[in-house]
Length: 138
Length: 154
Image 1 (cartoon, each protein chain N blue to C red):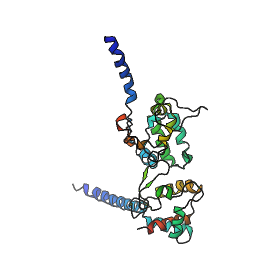
Image 2: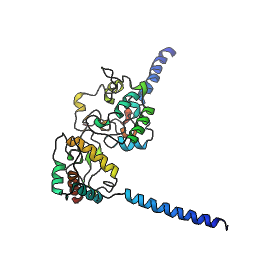
Image 3: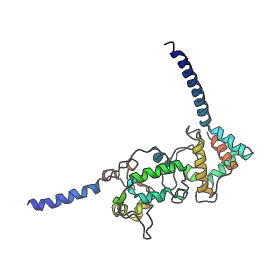
Image 4: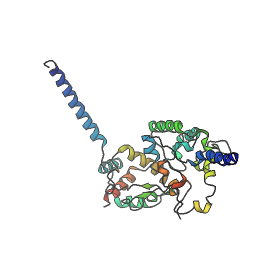
């Protein structure tokens, strides 16, 4: 019993260090929609324009589809895939708490969907504008 | 008498596997998360391994859309599809040029099963495309394509 005390203390210290690391790592990964707006504005070096974001989202750019072709022009609603007709959960954070909380997913979908609608990647300013608009929706 | 009865029974028995149009969808998190964002989980058994391999090597242009995913997941899903692919059960698996078929709707099995569906039916707004299995097969997402769960919308 006596001998176990130092070991237990060491274990406890390891556990608290581990816990602190896990909390820090968790904090770094769990993002909020606002974090993405901040990130894209910083990358663009300019503030977002929600009005420009709305226009960008709802009008066809260079491709067959606009963002609204699948997400509708009211992204607080459920969308439908333009080709397969599969339901797509609402994109606006106010309507769907799961949206814009994972950087890997956000980057993946911007990459793919910008390619589909513009045949290129989106600029940081375009992403900031869209984020600004989505966050302004009630 | 016995022999006269035996033939229909034999034929009925032989046709049973063809009627059992349900596919077990083996659990795979990467497959579910990545492949069902835009469409239902098409059963891996509906194409052969070579077709899936070509599909997974061309995700940047997946039937006209960018469906690229990170390499680790791509490899994991490719392995999963290869393990559960349909082998020869899909019937024809290559096109006229000998390239692997990528569309389930072009396999011999699909064509045979849907030969009574007219072009006009496929084009209905409620159906949109032959790739929209769930329009008529209510339980398609669960791998159930059986006769009893078919309902063709107007």
